[in-house]
Amino acid sequence: MTRKTIILIGFIGLKFLLQYFLISSEYELQRDEFLHLDQANHLAWGYLSVPPFTSWISYIIQMLGNSIFWVKFFPALFGALTIYVVWKAIEELGGNLFALILGATCVLFSALLRLNTLYQPNSFDVLSWTLFYFILLKYIKTDDAKWLYIGAAVFAIGFLNKYNIVFLLIGLLPSLLLTEHRKIFLKPTLYFAILLGMLLILPNLIWQYNNNFPVFKHLKQLAQIQLVNVNRFDFLKNQLLFFIGSLIVIFSSFYAFFFYKPYQKYRIFFFSIIFTLTAFLYFKAKDYYAIGIYPIYIAFGSVFLADVLNEAWKKFLQPIAIAIPLLLFIPIYNVAFPNKSPAYIIQHSDNYKKLGMLRWEDGKDHSLPQDFADMLGWKELAQKVDRIYLSLANKNNTLILCDNYGQAGAINFYTSQKLRAVSFNADYIDWFDLTKKYENLISVKEAEEGSVEFQETSPFFLHSTLADSISNQYAREFGTRIFVFKGAKIDIRQRIKNEIDENKN
Image (tube, rainbow, N blue to C red; front, side, top):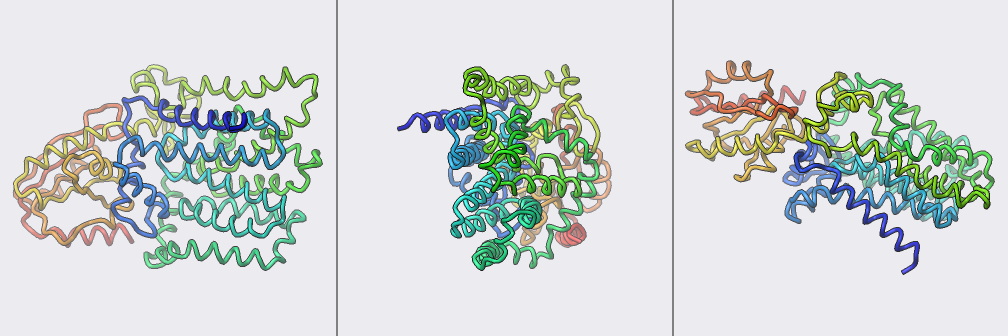
C-alpha cells in the first residue's frame, strides 16, 4: 500500500468519523429525512418531491435494518466519494502529494460536513456534479469518446437524484460555444451519448407525463413559498462561506485558467462557473443548490498552487495552506452543526443570527436554525400517536391524517405499531389506502390549524376530543395538536378523495 493510499484512507476515515460526531444525541432525524425514508415503502419512477434515486437508497437502508447508523451512513459515503473524486482529479492534473493533501483538506473542512449530516438528495447531487466535471476533465485531456458515454450516464443518474443538475448543463453549453471545445457539437458520438442519457431518464419522464408533470407544480410552489424570500446578495455571500477555508485555492484556479499554460485547454471551467452562478441568481435559487460547483475548482487550484509555490517558500507556505481550512473550520464547528443543545443556542443566539442561521424559509428569524428545529419533537409525536392508537376500539379501521409530511414520516418511522400515517402534503397525497371504511380518525394538526380542524370535523363523528399535543418548546412542531375522532357517522372516503383532487389541482 502506497503512502498516498494510506493518506487517502485516512481522509475517508476522518470524514466518516466527523459525520457521526457532529450531531448531538438530543436531536432526531430531520423532517425531510422521514419523507425520503418512507419512499422505500412506495417505490416508483418518480415522486412529487424528488426523482426516484433517493427511494432506491432508502430501500437499501430498509433492507439493512432502517437504523439511524445507516440513515447517516449514505450521505457520509457520498461526501467521502466526493473527496475521492477530487483526489483523482488532482492526480489527473499531475498534482503532487501536497496538492492531494491540500485538496482533500479543503473538501473535508467545508460546507459538505453540514450537508452530509442529513439524508437528503443534496449529498449525492454534489457528488454527481463533481463526478461529471471530472469526466469532462478526462474527456478534454484524452479526447476519448468513451467519456462522453460515461458522462451521459453520470448526468442521468444525477438527474434521477435531483433535477438541480440541469443547471450544470445550463452553464456548460454556452461555455462550450465560447471555447475551442465547440467542435464537440460536430461529433456524432455526442448525440449517441445524449441518446443514452435520455434512455436512462426516460422512465422518470414518462412518470412525470402520466402524472401531469408535478415537478412544475412543485417548482411553482417552491417559488411562491420559499424562493420568494431568497436574497441574491445573501446567495453570493453564502457561496463564500461554504468553502471559506478554500477561497484562496478556488480563486487561484480562476487565475490559472488564463495565466497558467497547462490549464489553457481547461478554460471552459471558468466560463462554466460564471454562467451557472448567473443562472442560479436569475432563478433566485437557494444558496446550497450551487455547492456542487466548487470541489472540481479545489482540484485545479491545489495543483496550481503546488506547482507555482517558490521552492524556498514551500516549507513555510505549504503547512499554512493546509492549516487554513482546518483553522477556519474550528469557529464554524461551534455554530454550523446540531452539536449544541437548543438551550445553549438560544443563550448564544447572536452568534447564530449574525451568520443568518436563524432565518427560516419564511424570511423571518426564529430561536433555532430551521434544520435544528426540524430535528426535535418527532419521537414525542410518534409515541403519543402510538399510545392513542392502542387505546382505540376497532383500531385497524383508523386513519392517521397529518398536516405535513414531516409528521406523517416521523410517525411511520418511530411508531412501534408500524402505522401508516398519511397527509395531503407532498408524496403522501398518493399513498392513501381508500379500500378501508374508516371508523376512527387521528388527526395531527399544526398549532394554528387546530381549532378549525376540530370544528369542521367533529360533526362527522360521534365522539371528538383533543387528546394531546407536542410539548417540546424547541421543536418546530411545538404546540402541534393530536385530535381523536371516533365513530364515523358517514363514509369519509369520498371527502378524502375530494380533498386529494383539490390539493392535486
